[in-house]
Image 1 (cartoon, helix red, strand yellow):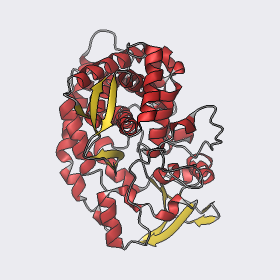
Image 2: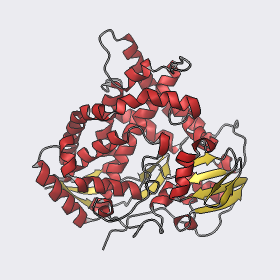
Image 3: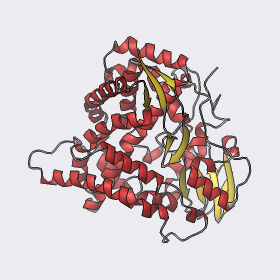
Length: 448
């Protein structure tokens, strides 16, 4: 029988305002009602009208056809602003367009391939750490360590200004404070009223920003030829229409965003994949056989990936069940129609990617771990806007190819060398900016 992995609590009755606020503070995924897993759209009212959309055609309209009508909600912006300001992820309109143009060259296929040797070395080091773990490991920590080196190479051509443990602890602290929905948002407090999470996150924000700023300042003082990395492109970026360049503050915010997003989401996809494989021995055996047959004990490289389709299927299924970001929020600007329902100016539109990926009308065995559903010959017909781990439309994640290559190289390399079995405590999916397993993914690790 297919393994049915852990999900989020689902409420089947209307929550009060206080219950909603407490649920959002505890785990944003708990806000998604049961109907959202079976219907294209669900609506309600609490301080303002809200809608929860889990429909591919509706997603296409919001993310592509009428994108400008659905900017990010102020609640989401406020949660992110202390750390990343109005950088690429938080910006809209012209401000977003020119920042996007600045970073796209870094993630071309040619540049991503050039980074592959660093990914291969990282995968080999991850195996060394697992051999020394004593038979039990927590995979979120292990995978965050693995992916941090690579994103530092992409962004800064090295990590001499970063302490991975300190930086990682600051990220987690930020997610647990400013990254949680505030009770004040649900009680109608005005936007200018300070939220406790923002105040509590001050130290972690300073820690992250000081490390990033030190790396930028070191690059400015550099006299030899600069590396062709993300920071170099950011320093040279200029809006062709206005001549605008990034201020020092803009540089810190954008580099901060890419360093965090560039390793956090990949690490989580890997950790969730290993949780799933630990609980599905048959799928794990299939993955190991394929990896060992192709790699013969060596670390994977980009030229191996075409011969490792099942590794990619596992990652895709892991990101279906545990998308990096489980819920997005938009504000409606002008009247529009979605799924036959009228969107009015000022309405809040939630995009529950978590529910879309587990929707009973869109996925057969929607709660089951079935990596074969992503096989090229599976016969399943899937709408492009039904599966959105990296978003879609003009704002699709610019680093998606980079993330997938890194994840495939690391997963293929380690799965050939180790057998994984579940260990207590079991993880719970909790969304704090990203969908993290709490308190972690603990597994028994046996060298093969």
